[in-house]
Amino acid sequence: MKRYSGFSLFKNALSYHENWQKIWRSPKPKSDYDVIVVGGGGHGLATAYYLAKVHGITNVAVIEKGYLGGGNTARNTTIIRSNYLWDEAAQLYELSLKLWEGLSQELNYNVMFSQRGVLNLGHNLQDMRDIERRVNANRLNGIDGEVVTPERVKEIAPLINISRDCRYPILGASWQPRGGTARHDAVAWGYARGADALGVDLIQETEVTGIRRKNGAVVGVETTQGFIGARKVACVTAGNSGVVAAMAGLRLPVESRPLQALVSEPVKPCLDTVVMSNAVHGYISQSDKGDLVIGAGVDGYNGYGQRGSFHVIEHTLQAICELFPAFSRVRMNRQWGGVVDTCPDACPIISKTSVDGLYFNCGWGTGGFKATPGSGYVFADTVANDRPHPLAAAFNIDRFNTGALIDEHGAAGVAH
Amino acid sequence: MLLIHCPHCREDREEEEFHYSGEAHIVRPLEPENLSDEEWGDYLFFRKNPRGIHHEMWHHTAGCGRYFYATRNTVSYQILETYMVGEKPQHTADSAGASQ
Image 1 (cartoon, helix red, strand yellow):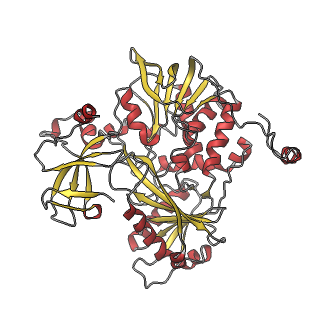
Image 2: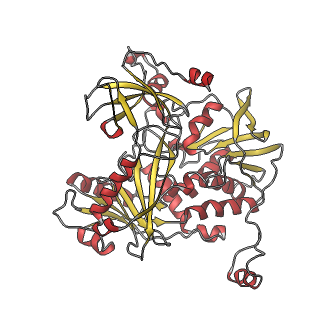
Image 3: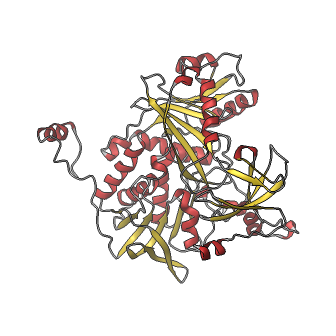
């Protein structure tokens, strides 16, 4: 892999940028791998990267039915934060945030991580009590955060409406300055390039159609390119996790729901932070290109259609227009949906299964993007050592039978 | 926007009048105190979540206020039928597979 640098940019400019190397190879699948990662989104590619980088397991394939990073990695609103309430979740997301902070240098690939801060607004007394509790919990876990007044909110995001004469006035907010956004595609591409350089085979347009087992252990996967052997299979397939689990005769406590997002026409810089609101149910930031990136809630019903209902985005835009009256005149450009795998407790599953050599990393629901590096890091460790990473232990699938749930609905960003 | 036929009202109404209430035909355990942790967890949290034909419960919240069942394709979102609680579905994953 040739490293990107100012010098390489200059050198390639001399040949009109026509001689850049391919970012990754497109190899034919080998007959056998140590580990097969099913799903080439951000989490899957990060898993493959850390398997190779940290654990020295390079005989790895990532098998993706479409193209790399074409699922939820490309469909989210790119918000990154770690202000979760419970210790287990907070530590996992904080590991992720710390990895984000050095990711562009680590990957030699600009993931455009921008720590522009995240505001979570409170609109009633209970919101403010929850925010104070959450911020205190965060600080005890070493995570930055403060409770701010409406006036401070106005300083941070001047276009916001803090008047008291609206239906849901802003009473305050939690503010995490280290939060922010990143370029979603670049994260997948950066991990893909890094993994490929370490010898990982990235196999696109190949769908896994079955998981072959022998004596209760995984021996490989059936694909549209034929059988590929593997000692371990790690599934990171987000909305389709239940479908993949069924191939191995397993059930997961996840339900797949459409989650929508939308962007406006590009406008001049007007919002240099991320604003989220649980109560009025919307979140917004502005991309470097200038579009307002707006997130909606999940649709009310199960679905795999990668699209959603219009009234859901209508509801979200009502919230955005109430928070930012100036945006009522901005035209919306594009809208899309992704299929998110929601868990009953709004926390992920990072777990071994009852099948030897089969691992699942799923259930990230509506907030998986921010966790991409940390998720890949702890999952790679779990797969490599065949035991849960200390930070992943609490996210074992057994918790749905033992009752040790980690109820993060309050901090999951928007109420679902 | 889905257009949903309420079998009680016998009318096609907009999705916003309804509330989705999860998988249908889940039988409440008769003796919950005798269930193992596995069985109780399965009852509470584990759902079929199929990619395809799904039997589900809907609540006509802004209409008659009553519950009914629907058979819906979770990929195309087409609603194949709605039927009363207590009735059996006409369309199942097996019958849909046969007709395709």
